[in-house]
Amino acid sequence: MHSTHKHSTHKHSTRKKALLAAALAVAAACSLTACGADDSGSSGKSPVADVSASAKTQAATVLDTPFTKPDFVLTDTHGKKFDFRERTKGKPTLIYFGYTHCPDICPLTMGNIAIAKKALPKAEQDKLQVVFVTTDPGRDTPSELGKWLKAQDPSFIGLTGDFKTIQAGARSIGIGISPTEKEKDGTIVSMHGAQVIAFSPKTNKGYLLYGEDTSVQNYTKDLPKIIKGETP
Image (cartoon, rainbow, N blue to C red; front, side, top):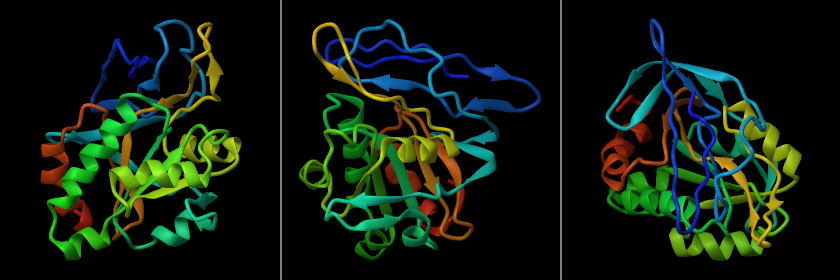
C-alpha cells in the first residue's frame, strides 16, 4: 500500500511501500496529495478498498478486478448536469481527482495528458475523454474549473458538485480524498489520491491505474492502446 504523502510548492516528500504476495497488491487509496502543505498529519483518512493487480506495464498497473464506473451525476463547466456513467459509455475515458489551486501535481498531471493527447491523430483525439473532478468544490465553481482547464486543453471535461458525492465516487474506484483544511499559515489544502484511472470503451471498466510519476512519453505510448480498449 502506498502511504500518505503531501506535496508542497517548495517540498515534495514521497514514501512508498509495496506489498508483494503471489501477485502484486496495490492499494488504490494510493498516495494522498496535499498541495501547499507540510508533512504532518492526515494519514489514514478516507480509507478505500485495496486493489489487486497481476501485471505492470512500463507505466500502468493493470488491475486484476477492474473498477465499475462511479455512479455520480455532477455539474460540468457550463453548469449542466453530467451523468458520468451515461456520458462516458463506450468511450475511452481517463479520470483524475484534484483541484485548481494545487500548485504542483494536478497541473503537471493534466498538462502531461494534454501534451500526449495532442500527439494523437485528430480522429483519436476526438474519441478520448479526459475528466477532471474537483476535490475542492467550495472554490472550484463551474466557471473557475472552465478557466483552469481551458489552459490545459479546452476539450477536457471539468466536474464539480457536492463533496460527499464526489468523495463516494472517488472511493468507489479506490481514490481517497478528504475535505479541504486550513493550515496554520492560512493555506487551504485538499488531500486527494494522485492517480489517473483509464476506462475501456469495450467494457466500460477501469482497468489501468497510472501513478503521479507517469510521464508525457508514457501517456503518448499508451493512449493509442487505451482508445482501443487494449492493454498497453
